[in-house]
Image 1 (cartoon, rainbow, N blue to C red):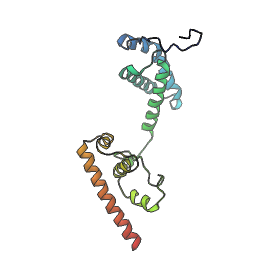
Image 2: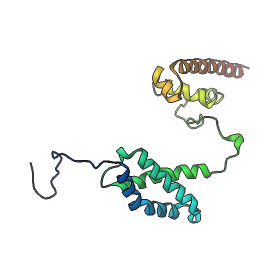
Image 3: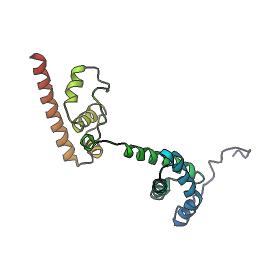
Image 4: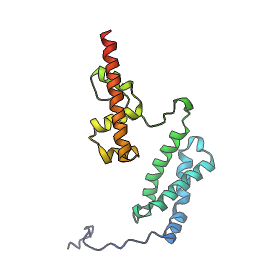
Length: 184
């Protein structure tokens, strides 16, 4: 083993501190004010104090839920990273969207911008619902099927198979309608 200064000591056993209630209390005492200040500095016009408190509490709640993931000696950087995600989510929630245009499901594929270069494919896919597009592209592009597709969709295996079957049928109908429109 290399005992020189700065040498890595990876072959030594590392004893991890228990991440229990006393650990969390110490974490809270040491870092809650820093988290609060983090949000006050980043919220528009300093934000409301209650918003900063709520967001800091959300980070601390995440630290408690994921306490086994919080690295010893790097707790605050871990919480700042988490705070960045919490703030991004908060900002997305604050964007004003009319209820009529909020999608029921995420539309993670915009047919106008995706990688397919065939304009007919883009047009046909744009006629499908975001859910059908998502299902078809998870299968076609990402190679998902069966249990993996069910997990992504949050449904049973039978539900995923049925959703895929329906999406394929709607794709066939949309393709037929597109061809009829082109031929007319």
